Image (cartoon, one colour):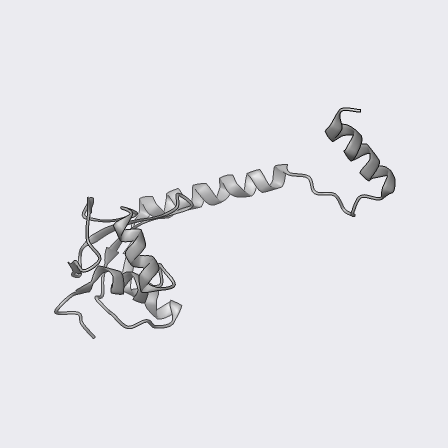
Length: 130
């Protein structure tokens, strides 16, 4: 347990299960997808309890979290969720994004079966303008 000392940023992101490997965490940090206190940081930066992190995972999942525990060992997901506290704005933003994605999925109509020979002819005619 490294609560008093602090831990490397890439190790903490891996231990808190934001990324599957330290290499992915390091790449995200280098690409500016992880900000510490609103500023870019290096992978070796030491973070402590109370630091504010902004984690952008390709625009799909954007987290604003406050570090609660500094750990460098990967643990199970329920325990890893105790390492940080997500801000209310971040939770609301992710819920809104999820609702938008669900609405977009509901608007798409998928067929109940594969196209038969007649359907394939109609698709081919439509695509080629016949």
